[in-house]
Length: 168
Image (cartoon, rainbow, N blue to C red):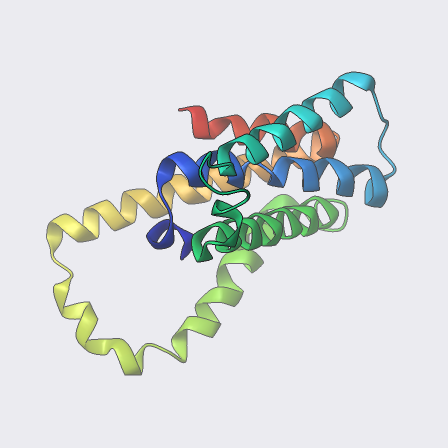
């Protein structure tokens, strides 16, 4: 996301975890999932962590007004919305078929931009091609695994656990 270039990692990572709160709420609202006190406590802890991270002693709420923080929050909202649609789609499609669509549709969209950026493809060499191939392979495996998790588990449980990936 563009927020990577506009903010410090120490600020970006904790704030981006606010998407867990959005995922928790959407799971309850859209999927009629159960509410447990421990789920609520977890959401509150994440929210407080985001506020504490943004706070600067010299100026109240100064970090919230920075472009990078806004982009982090916006990116977090878009991410949880996309994952919510992923969860919904696992109810309608076979995971393999849906995985095909989520990669095929962006390919069609990007095809319109390739002619304008054809010169950038000259930087591709054997090393970068292998790296790109491995990155793509692990991305596909990751997405397929997440879709499988969404199919088998409540969204409000699965989504926060999946966010622990930022620890690693």
